[in-house]
Image (cartoon, rainbow, N blue to C red; front, side, top):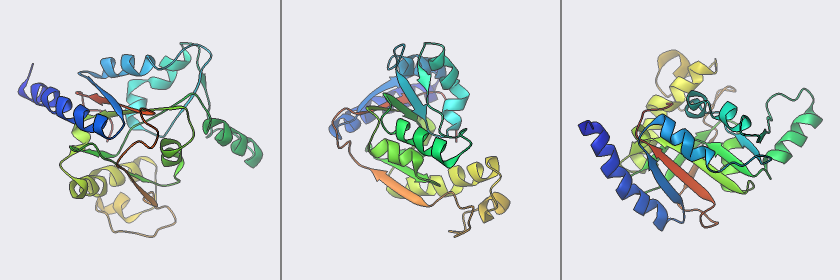
Length: 211
């Protein structure tokens, strides 16, 4: 075990206690494959699930892994008509399990996210029966200020490039606090506690994933 891996393991123990004090449940997965197995434990054949847009989940191959178990993926992105899209979003809001990552998480167990459309945050806050967050330990920040800084300097610029957005940060790599029509930083959500105890489960991963 490298010093970095041991540090992540030690930090995870501290954070799990902090998260449990905030009515979350949490566990530590040393590797990406461990994190995927932990996520699969929440799914049974016949269950419905959906996901937020996430490089973490993409890198894990989560969607394919869960559908191979016999679960149904609700895709709100592919419908062609407004009516079909509305129906899919309604189904997401009451699915059995919703998976996402988080943009940042403080050492004290607070989740910090900035969203473009609000779909991830809507599901995180209310609706799906169970929410599972997979967050690599490189997303851990000391406090709220450093969490915002991480999002502004790393998360948002990289996602703007990935999504081909016409924003200042996509060009300069630096947040300009823009009001561009393509802005992906429209909603800032700080989750300091799970309103429904144990509804939100957090898998802390010791292997770097996503942005």
